[in-house]
Amino acid sequence: MSISSRFAVGIHILALIEINKDGINSSEYIAGSVNTNPVVIRKIMGMLKKAGLVEVHPGIAGAKLAKNISEITLLEVYKAVNVVQEKELFSIHESPNPVCTVGRNIQDTIVPLFTFAQLALEKTLGNVTLEDVVKDINEKEKLNN
Image (tube, rainbow, N blue to C red):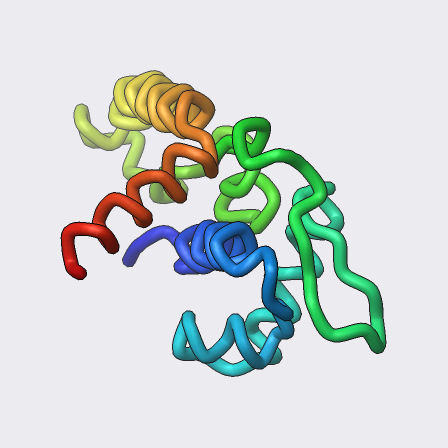
């Protein structure tokens, strides 16, 4: 089990829109880069639009960023695509056996650890911008050419 790929696809979409800002970023074009169905792209684009990260207009091919790439954090993308709900990155099993020492105490032991881990992840994502991602992609592309 892993975090939904919507997060990675959301970052992919935003980076592609920036790198191809002089071209037409249709859902078909983006889907070709992601290697998925345009319907998947339109769904995620709707989430990104609702979060104020992209501008799309029905019936008009293309999308553009609604904010400067230095202002878009990966935490915003993470939250925009509904990867997980607040404080629910890690789920715990319901109703452990209260007669067992571990069952009786496991939830109170691990919930604070899970909360701390999620907050650490979110802090890290909040410190990385789309600009950082785009710069890294461009640097890697220069090395490949």
